[in-house]
Image 1 (cartoon, one colour):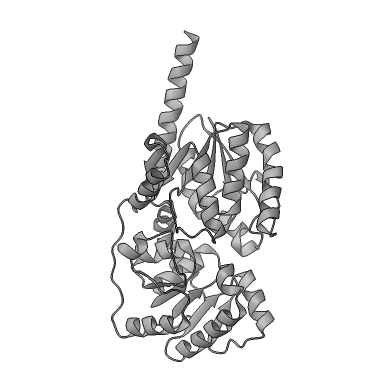
Image 2 (cartoon, rainbow, N blue to C red):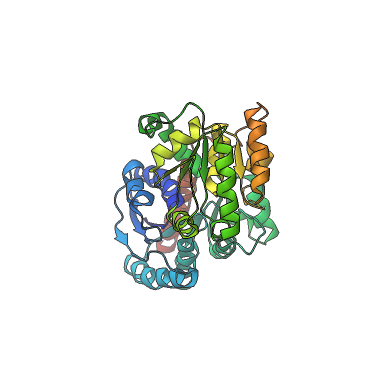
Length: 366
């Protein structure tokens, strides 16, 4: 059985790595790793392959950063030939980035089967490019691996046949659990005993100059009580430079390798983010998280975890941080099946499919 993994952005790497390693344990499976190049910064791609112990990509499409339409079109154009060359039994796509939807479209048109890892998540906000990618990918996929019960309910409402859907848990947590013991060795230097950790990258936030200026001012105010460490996404750094806004009191870092960032998350007093995956990681770690968005496709992190949706109000963020500093942080629990065994459950489904195909082939030749 030949399996192609398509990855393009930082979160994809963390989701693909444990499944790639799990499938290596099964005989008769060949794997090809395709990097679309959607994220091209070294700290946001190459180092992930090293730290997550998966091989360098067999194919790099080298698409890099462009508009959504240009990037999606180029990934489709360059990926089509790779899929035709390999003719895989399965193409595995991850998450909700442009690479995910582009690969699903290519494979559906070529009648190559697609499995979507982290299917069924919905924000119900179609102004988010990621929501459109999720909708398209799930409609085209032949197998849908979901992280939580709410994702199953979303797919059922959209008419996805139940036999295609498998509740397997959160594969990002597989990576977190495996890497957590090692992360302490990668703590950045001179980290204070207490600090807040900030990440901001969504265009709806950082491309709004008024909001970004106000947010930086609020973070500066917060830093007088709680030091702020801010690993800055390349897009965000560019926007800050355009504003010529001061960052006094904030410790701005370049994007961090996964293990260094995980070490910071584990030690942080609070995390402020607009990332999806960080909402999940902080829930597992039991670290208070403030999500700077009006909605989330991961409501389980609010219903069961430590996440609080604060909208886009910098003032609200300060109020919530003051609650944490006063010892009134939201408590949470780890959701079901976030146990480090998601990749095993996905591999089991794929192995059952291979066994069924083998039986069908033997009957057909009888």
